[in-house]
Length: 111
Length: 114
Image 1 (cartoon, helix red, strand yellow):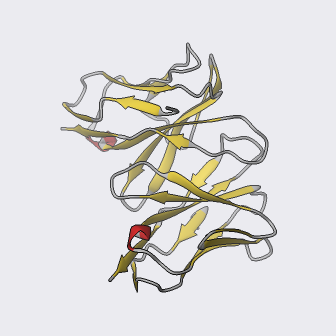
Image 2 (tube, chains in turn brown, blue; image 1 turned 30 degrees about the vertical axis):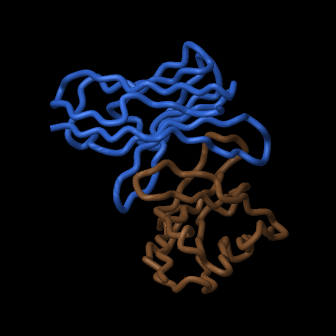
């Protein structure tokens, strides 16, 4: 089983739709969780961290479920500019050295 | 402007010809790391460094070397490149803060080994 698993997609949604991605992780000792966004052939960039209580940043909401070992990302009112690959990232330990990246979920928002 | 730079951005080379990919950051970050990204495999860590003269292996270190003689620079060295090292390489840096570790990535180096 992969340490971090994501549905690769693609998720094709119309502009304005709400879309949700899940990501499961296998290491119950994982401590920090993130969503990164990667545009085609570009570097990943932090979208948001995921807190235990859940957190929201504009149209984006992230949730963590430690019992079931998954994190989720909800995007409301999708824009064309949201088209990208979304990477789930898990910090396996207490230092920055042990980040594991999922393979990403591709989102395509269409007119 | 805060950034991570990598050079070269694109490189085509032949098997066995030593090469170095440079990485530099201007944010005074302690932590730096190299990743490779391959289709279906995601980003995998090659080596990381927690500070000057402190380096350690990541998940896929075979065939690579690194050094950290200065805080801002973290070059990746391929002593004898092979075709299976054809990949997209990213350098990243971050602060060593407990809790949140936002990684700042360089623009990537696309390496082809023939």
